[in-house]
Length: 79
Image 1 (cartoon, rainbow, N blue to C red):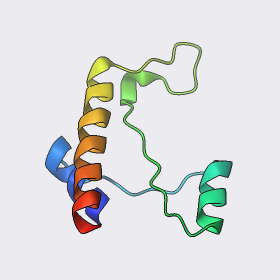
Image 2: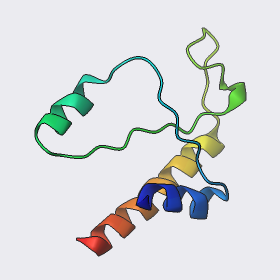
Image 3: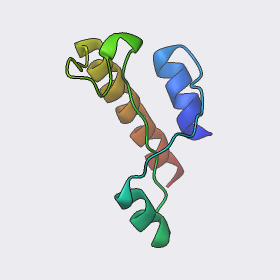
Image 4: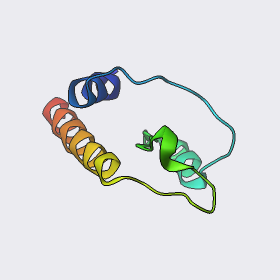
């Protein structure tokens, strides 16, 4: 919930939570040790994800950085 609220504040819209195929082994390894993980992306519909012409606009990188910084501030505040 904290992450959703942070995304909404920084990006101006509430994120859509989706589950998709694939796996990221480090997430399972962290979970097995009781360490929660948040996996997210900041791509755009025009990014052509997983194509030969894949790209990430600079605005997506700025949005990701701003959201990450704010989320870490909020998590630090709750200890």
